[in-house]
Length: 609
Image (cartoon, rainbow, N blue to C red; front, side):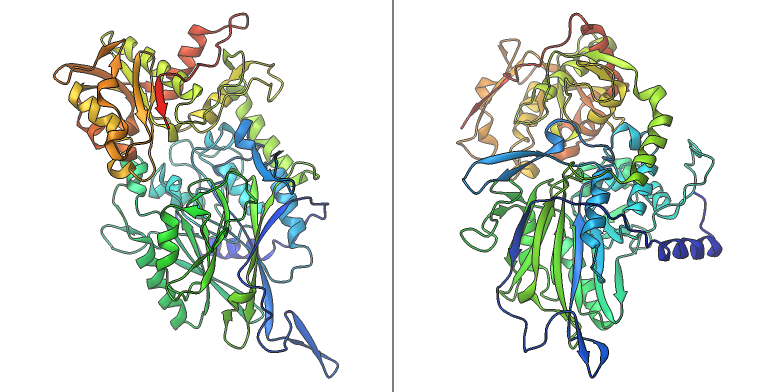
C-alpha cells in the first residue's frame, strides 16, 4: 500500500482546515428528544457567551452540538424498500411511514442543523463502508469516503464491516492511494479520509498496539471533547477470517475505560465513546420513548451492559451495529444517567445531541444533555455537490450495473424470521450447488448477508419488475463463494439448533433455507429446544442422524461464521462461483419479462409464538 509522505499529510490537514462551506437550505425533520434532567445549569451562569464591561467574553457554560449517525454502509443513493423508510409515532397513537435517506438529503440536513452553531462536531459509530451498494462497493468504497469528507465528518469508530477487506484496505481508506489490485478509478489519486478512524480495541497481534488511532480530541476556543472509538469484541465471529487475520479484538468496556484515563491525564475531561455495538429497542418507531416506564427500559441487548459498566468519566455513548434507533438514558456505574444513542442505519436518521461544556471544570454538565433523532427526509433540496459525486460514480458503474439479470412480479422482502428473499437466495445457491454436484441436498443462507430487498418499482429507468446487476449487488455485496460440504444428519440438526443457542442464544440468527427443508421453530421454548428436532424434514422425510447430506452455504458460513461452529466442520469441500453469480444465474434461468419470479411464500419454517 502506498505510504503517505509528510508533505501529503500536511496537505491533508490543510484540506481539512479549509472545509468551511455550508449549504444554506430548508431542512425538515421530526425529532424525539431525550433529556437527562430538566434542571437548570448550576449557578446563575447561562450557556453561550457573556458580555462583560462592553467586552465579549466566553461564559462558563458552552453548548456543543454533537451530530452523529452510524451504519451508513455506502448508501449514497436513497435506499430502496423498507431500507429507505422509518416509522414515526403520531400523537393520536397511530404510526406513519416516512421515506428517508440518501446522502444528497443527509448533507442538506446536517448543513442546516449546523447553521448558527459555533461549536459543532460530527461523529459516527462505524460501518460507514462495507456491504455497500454497487455505486460504492464496486470501487472499494472510495465514493463513500469522498462523500463523508464532503459531509464534514470529524471522526468515526471502526465497525465490523470496515474489516471486510482487511486491515490494509482499511488503512488505505484512511490514508489514501490507489487500490493495489484495481488501481485508480479516475485521473485523480484517491486521497483517503479527512477524518480519523478510531480503533482503540483492535490490536496488531504482533505489536499489541491499536492498528489506528485509539482516540481523538476535538478542540475549539478552549473547549475540548475527547472521542474514543471501538468496535464490538465479537467482530471475528461475523467477518471473514481473511479480513481479521493478524488482529486481536479486545473488550469494549475495558478498552474505553483505559483510554478514558489516558484522556483525563491529558486534561480532557469531556469524553464521548463511539461504540460499534448496540441494542434492541422495544419499538420499531424511531421516536418512541426509550425511557418509559423508567430510564433505559425501552432498550435491551449488549449495549445496556456496556453502558452500565463504562466509566462515569465518559459523558455520552454513540452506538450502532444493530441498525436500530433509540435515544436512551442509562445509568453509569455511579448511578447517574448518561445518554446512549443510535440513529438506525443507511443515513435515514441522524442524532442531534447538545452537550453543555463547563469551562471551569472542563467536563460536561450531564443534567443539561439533550438528544434527538431526526429524520433525513427527502422533501429538502438535494445537496448539489453530492448529486455531482453520485453522478460521477454512477457513470463509471453504469456499464456494469444497468444490465438486467432477472424479472420479478412484486417486491421480494428481506425482513422477517424467514424472508421471501432469503428463500429465493437459498434456492439459487441450491441450484448452483447442483451444477457443481448433482448430489447437493440443500442450501443454507445467513440472514445478515442479505442487505436489501428486491423492489418491483423501477429505480433507475430500467422498467418495473426488472432486476439489474446493481440491485443484485446491493442485496449480496460480499463476494462470498458458494461452497459445498458434507455433514451428517446429526451435524445438520446441530447447525439448526445453533441458530438459537450458543453465540446466538440472546439474538437468534435464523438461517434461510432452500426448498424442501422444513421444520418448526417454537419460540415459546428456550435455547436449542426452540428447534423441534422431530419436525426437521427434507422433502418430507425425517433427517437421518447417521446419513450424509451435501449442503451448500456461502464461504462465510462454511468457515463457521455468525456463530455456527458446526458449519466449519464439514468435509468434501468444493468451491463454486460467488453468491451474486449464483443469484444472477438462477434469476436469468427462471424468469423473463413475460414470466417473472413471484415472491416466495416464506412458509418453510413453521413458527410457534
